[in-house]
Amino acid sequence: MSTERRPPAVPPAPDLHRVLATAPAPAPAGALSATLTFAWRGMLKIRHVPEQLIDVTLTPVLFTVLFTYMYGGAIAGSTGAYLTYILPGVLTMAVLFTTVYSGVALNTDMTKGVVDRFRSLPVWRPAPLAGAVTGDLLRFLVAGSVVVLLGVALGYRPGGGVWGILAALALVIAFAFGLSWVFTTAGLLLRAPNAVMNVGFMALFPLTFVSNAFVEPDTLPGWLEAIVDANPISHLVTAARGLADGDPSASEVAIVLAVAAALTAVFAPLTSHLYRRGR
Image (cartoon, rainbow, N blue to C red; front, side, top):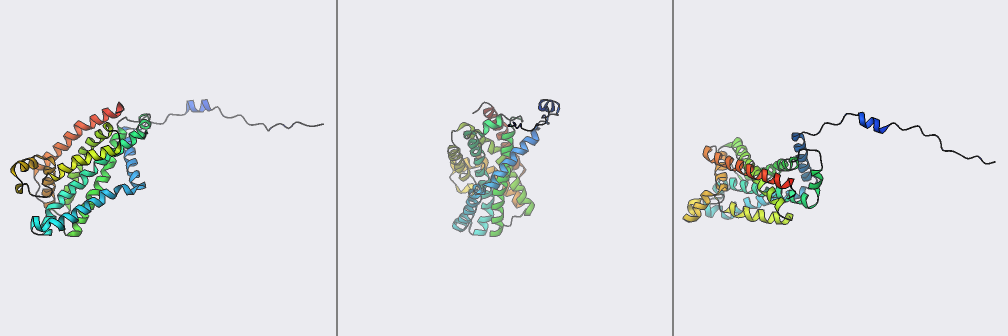
């Protein structure tokens, strides 16, 4: 006679519905914590893909060395004198060119569908945008630090000392923060990351070179000198030079901060609007 084997009795599972219904819900992430989390995401991308900093670090090095030793004697009479003049300009150029990547990164997330996932999260809606731009401050700091350290290695000794250099770097980063919102707007309007990069560089190249970053404006034709004097990049370079030399101009610093605040006030809400409506 065969005996039928029955599976061992399984103890009853707990009432999951009852447990889940009575467990306290986790507190939602606040605006600040969500923003810092997305900022940390941007830093992790640099950590895992450090190659993205190659152009940020190598391009300023090339510009500083080539311009100083190729044109320093012809423009300023000596490489040392020209290094003192050009370094704040190269510092400005290096940091501002880095702002283009704020728009490139946002466009990449948009085209890959990452932004759709962010919109579904129960967090403060602008947190991915604010966090991404905040995280880019590290990139700005790296680019500026490379230029300053290279300048010091080549003999750059400004009158303002360490604190003057740090003040100039902080001012350039503050302006870059405002400018980065312009490129986040472009990142949401354009269709591909390469388009954002091309448009950004095409805009920054004339703004940077048609300024007082590399030559004195009074050596230019009158009509071009007027354009250079009106260029906000010229005001930024002049303010950075003054801070680094220990002779800051309050009016130039005020103009730079006002322009940075205006860019943020206009383009940050515009970026947020485009982000909410999905371009």
